[in-house]
Length: 242
Picture (cartoon, rainbow, N blue to C red):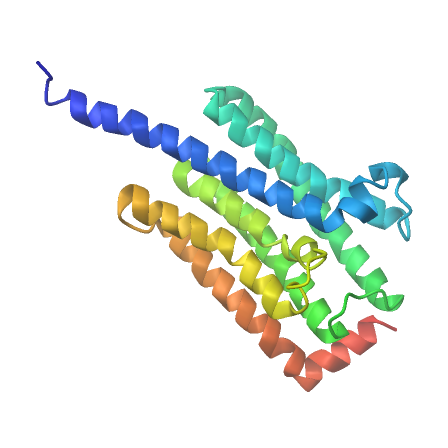
């Protein structure tokens, strides 16, 4: 005979397995997105031995790839029940994150100054990358604050932080359909929408962190289109590029 209390426990175990599988899958998809974007210029070129413009780009690349790999490891540790190791390794993430913002900021300015921007106008490129960095930093800070208070919010915010910096990799995908900023945004949007879909399917409600992440993501996309159209931003971009 099955006790009534056995049902919620069984459901909780099944939900936990599903959640671990989902977070592992989306982290792997993020790494795949990064690999596809930089496979020729960075990964297959030998990582540290790749012929990049300068040392700052090497530092920038190493930190960003390290972040995505750290995300994979952290999710794997939680899935295997090693929460203590997860917390200890989280200190590394807290150190890497500000270094990522600093290195990316310098790399962005240097790219503008040598006119090494992708196939989009400099004001759009500058606005997009700068906004992504700011939002990445904001999500990481919020995630660290939620680390002990709400593990569910913490891991969702960490995913949104990583999503915020995926656009440069996706923009470099060598596929015929990837020919515009709209295509990049469409592919990038699959990630936050997947988190929202998981919440709705697994718990029939949108987690607060997911809702906040979606709102910030929409605002970021809107600003990427609005800022470059402003004469003041165009002047600022030209000044930075001098």
